[in-house]
Length: 342
Image (cartoon, rainbow, N blue to C red; front, side, top):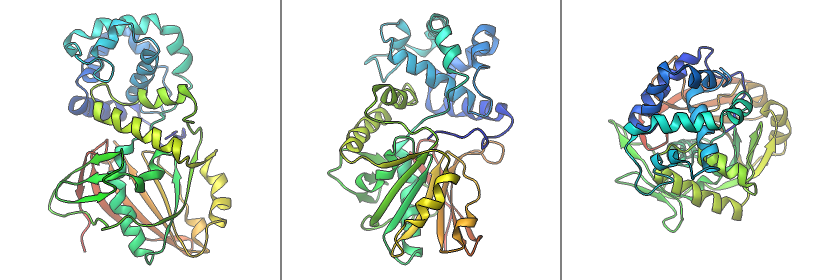
C-alpha cells in the first residue's frame, strides 16, 4: 500500500498515540525504542524528517528496519526475532538502536522525507474475506471483478488462494502455503462462504507499486513487518512466492486517473468490488451512474476510532445508497469483532 499524501489525519500526533498503543500490544521492541526517543533530540530530529502526512513512527521504524536488513552484522540486529533466533532483551536495545541510526544517519536523512508507507499485510485478508462474501451475495452471486486501491505488490489480490482459520470455522485452501489465523470475538459471527466466491478479474492500482522481481522491493515489504512477528514474516514470504507464480495485474498512478478505463473494461456479467485497506479512498460515486458498485474499506482513523473498521459502501446512480459498518478488526488482521447483523 502506497499512501497518497492527502488522506491521513492532519495532526501527526494522532498517529504517535496510535503507534504507541499498537507498539505496546504488538511490538515490545518498538515500544521500548519509541519511549527512549522521547528525550533524544538527535533521534527525534531524524523522526521529524518523515512527511507528517504519513504514520510517522511506523514509517520511521520501517526504514530503520530496511537499512538493518542490509546491515545484519550490526549488533542491533540481535534484538529482532525475525533476524535472530534468540533475540536479546528489549530493555538493552536502545543504545544499539541509537548507534545504528547514527551510523546510517545520512541514508535516513535521504530516505525519510521521500518515503511513503509501503506494506502488503496479507493477514488482513482474513478481515476482508467476509466482506467479499457479502458483496458476492448482494451482487447476485456473480463473479467478482476486483479493483484494489493501494495494492502495493498485489498480494491481497490473491486472497482466494489462501486458507483461513477462524477458530470454529475453516475457509479456503488447506493445501495453500499461506494459512491465516483470525480470532473472532464478540456476539456476532462473520458470514463466511462455504466455498470461495469466484473471481473473474483482479486489478491493483498504486501510486508506486512494488515489484517482487526487485530485491529492494521485497526487502521493503519485509521491513514493515514488526520485529517480533515471525508468523507474519513467514506468511509474507510464502505470499510473495505465490505471487511470483501468479503475478497480479498492477497499474501505476492515481486511482482517479485509472478508474474510468478500468471500470469501462469490466464485463457486465460480474460484480464490481473496489476495496482498499489502510489507504483511504475518495468518493467514487461518479463511476456508479452506469452500474452498481461496491466498495470495501478497511481503515484506521485515530482521530475518530481506536481500532480499524471494516465497512461496506454500495453505490447506485451516482450516490451512496447503503453504508454498513461490518466489523472492528485487529491492526494486522489477527482478530475481528463482527458488529453487523440482520
